[in-house]
Image (cartoon, rainbow, N blue to C red; front, side, top):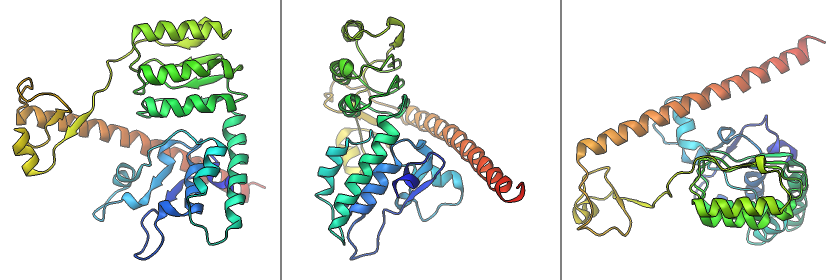
Length: 290
């Protein structure tokens, strides 16, 4: 059963909304298994959380916008087996079965993969630390792509500590993150000490760390903060030092964000249609070209 959910040509729809009185989706063992396995190697736009779909949807682009499931680093098999102990099963024997099947899927999709692609997923230090814990289990991994995320010094240090435990790794892409020059130098020294090729560590240009923002949505919250609608406020920044954001600037930011989202949706929809076209052609040739 794990082969279906872990296959890169399969689209997975997660039915996370359940009728009243039914055990919640997140508390059940089988849905947890299906979600975990489907997120191992599938493209981000092929796993959709249909429970996030708004009743007023009218196009496939809106479905992709609402329902794209956020990807997370896969769990190690022992960690997943522990997680299953907290889940409900109609048959207790299924818990051991799914733990075994997950281990098989992990070894086939992650443990034996030569390239792990986790670029541009908005991952931060928490996700980087999870990836670092996986590296000793990635026995065949030669390339790890983590570029264009939000990884800062803490996540970089966790990866640095695991370099020697992944002997096959020869390329690590971390450009476009938020790693300081000092930690870049430390990472480079650890990379070289682990016997890795200098050209394999791709640090490139780094960004400034991403600061947390507080989005004020209630009228009382906006009144207390002295902000207009759609105006972000940095968490912990004193009122006296903050610069007021004009409604026009807020609208411009919202319009720019909407344009970026529409461009991303268009690209994902085009990729989905291309995969669908390939799948239809395969079915056609299978049945009619024999």
